[in-house]
Image (cartoon, rainbow, N blue to C red; front, side, top):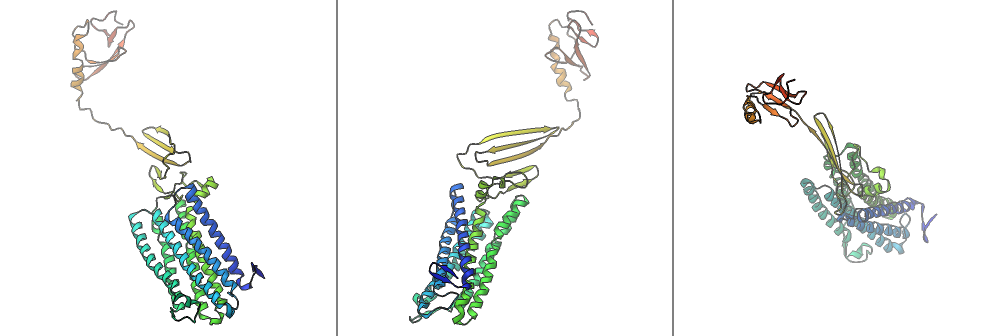
Length: 426
């Protein structure tokens, strides 16, 4: 037989005790890693992180209340003298469960609002938040004031009244499952529209879809609730073990799934090889959660990355040219190996035009100054003279000849000597 301190644990409670401690401990570690990542690595803590921390406190309270129920007879026969203590522990368990699962849902919703910044996403999340506020108020209100006065919950001798607990539990459990499915499918349309490579998109959808486990657990819990309420009242402490087990799994798995999307920066710090994407570009933060998104296609990709204000930036440009096309890449790097990579492709074309003779008069006019050459004869030559003494000769009709230096340095036209030029003709 197991013992929890001085409390003996009957065999029927082995699964509850092991699962409660294991999954609560796993939730503590996961949420702790999330807070470390957000506070120390990213230095960007949000409302969702605060809410998940509060939910963790509720989960620990639930674990403590469950152990108290075991102490007073859960899974075994409840002695009459310990009945009030058992019912008080049960009351705390119900409150802890209702409070924790609502905090987790609000944390996930605020996380969505931080990640998805489109107008449509914000409007939808705002509508869901208003619905959660209404549901949460009813859920917590009816859990606290199931009986009035409250102490009538565990002391039937007190004058007052209570809500039918079976109807209340079915009502809250049904809407709880509905809310789980809302949170599961809410991000999917926006994830599918992200401009990322297929591998990153599949990882993101898989990470957010792990909340489906919480939905499955919630459905199993509803079945356990039905089995317990259908049993005779003296046997309900025996069947109540399953409700306590699945309730514990639901809230802890929900916290774990809600924290997983925030852990990628921590995993990258531990295993740098994870910081790669399918197309060879660096993955970038999805609003501070470590999942890359950007636009790709055509000539290149533009991943988006948030940078701290005081990060040194170096620039490296590498341009390659090939024929009439040129391509360039420009990289901005910081000391933490984050980068913005821009790849551009340019295409250059040559367009040929017909010669309409529009340059004829310009060339002829430019050589009107030939009459002023020193020693010149006033010939009607035309053309353009280069710095090395060679020239292109073009007549008024547009035909051209080339000046070239003769053996003695005198320019010649064709084979004849230019008038007034020194030396002999070649």
